[in-house]
Amino acid sequence: MRSRGRFSHSMKVIDQWRRHSIMVILIEAALSINLLFFTLLDQGCSFFVA
Image 1 (cartoon, rainbow, N blue to C red):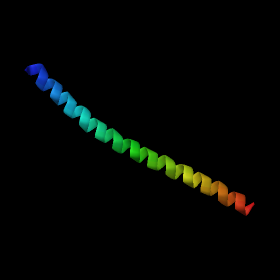
Image 2 (image 1 turned 60 degrees about the vertical axis):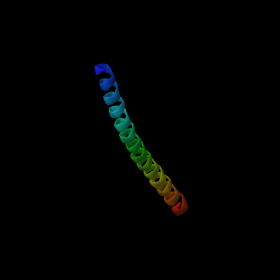
Image 3 (image 1 turned 30 degrees about the vertical axis):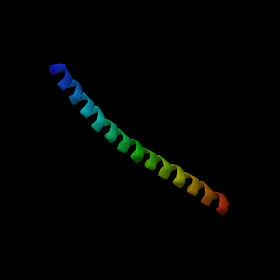
């Protein structure tokens, strides 16, 4: 019974961590896409200017 309670608690923690990690992954993806976009934009502007 005791181990079962500990197991359910760990499952709860894993669920919370999974949601948190999904948020972190989304934020990191958004930042990297932003960085990539601005890098391409910068190169594009310099390309058009040149």
